[in-house]
Each structure stands twice: as C-alpha cells, then as structure tokens.
Amino acid sequence: MKRNHRYILDLTDLQYKVVKLHWKVKFLRVLMGVSFSVVIALFYGIIFENIFGSPKEKLLEQQIDNYKLKYSLVGRELNSKAAALNSFRQSDDRRYRPILDMESVPESYRQAGAGGVDKFNDLMGYTNSDLIISYRSKIEELKRKANIQKESFESIKEMSAEWKYEIDHQPAISPVNVKYGISDGFRFRKVHPVLGVPRMHYGLDFHVPYGTDVYATGDGKVIESGWDSGGFGNCVVIDHGFGLQTTYGHLSKMKVSVGEKVKRGDLIGQSGSTGISSGPHLHYQIDQFGQHKNPINFFNNDITTEEFNEMIQAFESRSKLR
Image (cartoon, rainbow, N blue to C red; front, top):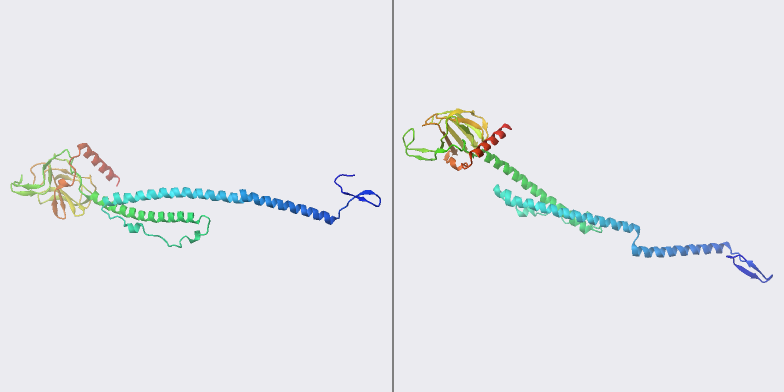
C-alpha cells in the first residue's frame, strides 16, 4: 500500500481499495485550511501591533518626536531672542532716553495685547495644538515687541541726530592753540588798556603772537567778515544757530567770507592788533540771544598742546571729506 493514501476494506472481495474523495470535499478542506491560516495570521498580527505597533505607526511616532525636538529648539531660540529684546529695552530705558532727555515708552503701550481669542482657531484640533499655539503666540508677542522697540530706536536715532547737530554747532573748543594763555577774562575793567576808562570786557583775550592761526569753535555760518567800527578791527562773526554767535576780533587776516559755512576747527583767520588794541592778541566773545556769555564756560582749557593739535587735525580731516 502507498503511504499518504487512505484505504478501506471492501467486504465483497475482501480487498483494500483506495478511498477517493469527492472534489467538493477536497476544496472544502483546502478552504478550511486557508481560512485557519488567515485567522492565525490575523490573530498574531493584532497581538504584534498591540505590543510593538505597526510600521506606519512607528514612522508617525518618529515624525512626531522629530517635530517635538524641533519645537523644543525653536523654543530655546525664542527665549534667546526674548532675552536680547529685553536687553535692548533696558538700554533704551536706562541709557539712551535718559541721556537724550526723552520720556520712556509707556508700559501700557509695550504690554498692549494683539489679536483676539479666535486668532489661532486654525491650529485647534491637532495632537499637539497646545504646544503649537503656545509657540505661535510667543512668536506673535516677540514680533509685536520688536516692532515697538524698532519705533523707539527710530525716535532715539532722530533725537540723537538733532542733538549731534546742536552739539556740533556749540562753540566748544579754544579758538587758538591752548599753549597760548588767556591775558584777560570776562570781567569789569576799572581802566581800559587803550581808552583809559572803566569798561566791561565781554569776552576773553588770548595773548598770542602776531599771525597765530584762529579756528572756528563750532559749526556755523559766517555773518560778518571785515572791518568792525566798534573797535574790534578786522573781525569775523559766526552764527551757530540756537541763538549763539561767536566773535573773533583784532585779526590781521581773515580767511573766510560772509555766507560761508564753516566747521569746528576750520581756519578762519590770523591774529593781529587791528582796531582798538594795545598789542597782538585775539578777542574771543560769545553771545546767546543777544546776551554776553563767559566763553570760559564753553570749552576745556586743560588739554595739552599735543591733544589740541590732534583735535584740529581731526577736524581738518573731517572738513576735507565734505
């Protein structure tokens, strides 16, 4: 007898005969085997996915973890930018505005809200909506505060430009090299050295040799350059704006003309002894809104000759770039 075959004893002839199954039975058995295999496979597949997760789920979880890491890095960067913005604000409130005599930006304006409660509705409904909305909100807040700070810095820039213009036009240096001393100051003279009568001296006299270079002490416009009948002889007068004028008297030569614009440190003439004068010197006078001011209060007379020369050279270099 052959193996793997079923046999049955035929009693009529007492012989074993092979049992032949009907094709329907064979098909049914195959179908049942396949069905059983599918059920077993599904069973083990479900158990595996419940324990370890499907490949697609694993990929999605990995992507979510990557996005969380990216958001974490974004959060650190936002915190860094917020700290930098706060540093700018402190410089604004404690340094720039006090120096320029400007009022601080109102806190109510800095903290003003932006947008309504429904602003981030489009971000609702996601797995990490709270995280996304928190970062989006922080970004919006930084943008708003950065715009406010930008406006503040622009106003500071405008004010600093105005201050620089005013400072440049202030008479702020000695009109001659500081190695030459002041022979007479802003005071009442009991006896005028030439006229011999009591008279107020409304300026400073610098005891300088004939032909000493005389410099403009601030930016301005020459409004007089010629002979002064009031006693200053050859005289240059510069209008600096802001009600300020400087007068340089008793010159031997004048190097500028009426209407000419000058910068601080520009050569405007040379000293002499013209007009009512007892000898070579420079009379330097400052008037503000028609009132005589003591020039000694407008410049630093404690610098060295070398420092003064370096300063004049710097002013001359700047003038050449105009």
